[in-house]
Image 1 (spheres, rainbow, N blue to C red):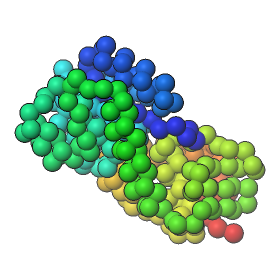
Image 2: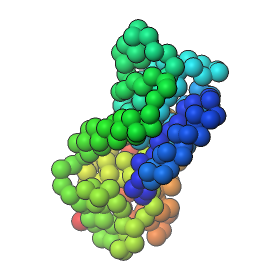
Image 3: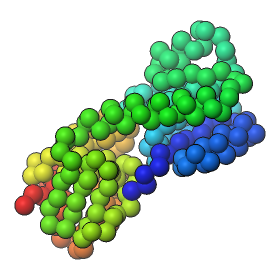
Image 4: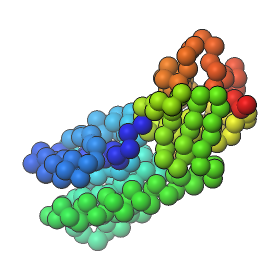
Length: 233
C-alpha cells in the first residue's frame, strides 16, 4: 500500500492548480487533479483521497454541492480554497461539512500546514475504527494495523486505500461474517457511497493480490448472499 497521503486538487484555474500540484509533490504527497465538479466526484469515488482541496467556483457545479454529496457518505477532510472571502460563504461551507477554509490569495506554507492538520485528524479518526491490536496474522497473511501494511509470505502487497480499509475491517473481526451493508457503511460511510457491484470488484482485486488460488480462497471467504468473513486459525 502507498504510504504517502493522496491529495485531490479540485481547481479550474490552471496556474493555481499547477502551483498547488508542485508544492504538494515537493513535499512527497501523491495527487490527483480535477477542474470540474463531475470529474472530482468520479475521482473521489475511485480513489478515496486522504484530503480534498476544493475550489468553490467550478464551471459545472458549485463546490458547496460537492461538500454536500461527499458528506452523505464520507468524513474525508475537505479544505476549501476559494476567492469567496465573505463570512457567510465560510460559514456555509463549514456548516455543510468542510474542515477548513482558506481565502485566495493564500501562502503555500499555510496551505501545506492546513493539509498536515487535516491528515493528522483524519488518520486518528480512521485508525480508531479498527481493532486496537497492532497486527493480525493467519498462515502467510499479516495485516499490520500500526504500519497500515499487508504482506503475504513476507512480501508486502500493494493495496489501494479502499482495499486496505476493506481487508483491515475484515481482519479486525476474524471468524465473524461481515454483511455487505455493514462493510459498505464502515468503509464508505453509507450505502450511498458505493453499491454491491463495486464492493465485489474491490474484493476480487484483493483476492487476486493475496490468494494463490482465487477459485478457492484461503483467507477471505464469501458467505453467499450475506457478506464476507476473514478466516482465523
